[in-house]
Length: 279
Image (cartoon, rainbow, N blue to C red; front, top):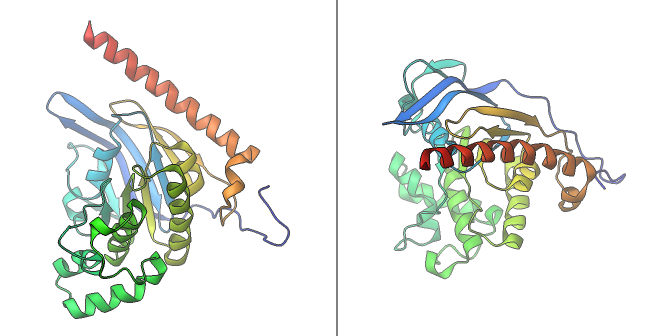
């Protein structure tokens, strides 16, 4: 059931004004065109998920938005309503890659404050701020533990806490739960939504899991096979907070079918191109 009389969950909000916009973005690496005419927007406070066939350019898109890669000339980037280059975004967004990248010689609290230290925050002040946030991330009592002493889910919580502590309006999360087992992954998804709804940061989230994309997102962006462009923008008009039983609801299944059909169509194109190139 989607709705419970004692619950009265809120419907999905109307799209907010764009925090970041990409218009006609191309990216070429040598002879390989990774992105072609990609246009997308992310509203302030939105949770937008990105899916697509393998090799479609999702990580390239993230690297551009993070300021790590400059797109080819001709497209346009806008951040907070102003035109910018990708390099202008460096340090203005927080970015969590697929691996947690925790430093093995640093304990939980010192891993969490790494970005704050790099920014020049006094170590004592940064540690105090992180200590206040530990309970929210389920890490109270683990501040002195080292990465090798933590489960995979707890390591991801530390990495996400580090990303939240680096206070930026836009957060980029690149498959943060991809390496976790199914049960831990489901728990982490619900926990992340709880944290997001308290902080209301803007999140752009890459995943290969269509269920995850629907469960988390306000909108799902489906990318085409390489060169990547936007094939489908699917609004997720499902109530929040998202309940675990949502994944079996008819509305959820209909959305999943639509997204899978779009991804499978692009995956088939990619396979056919690979076959032609191999001849």
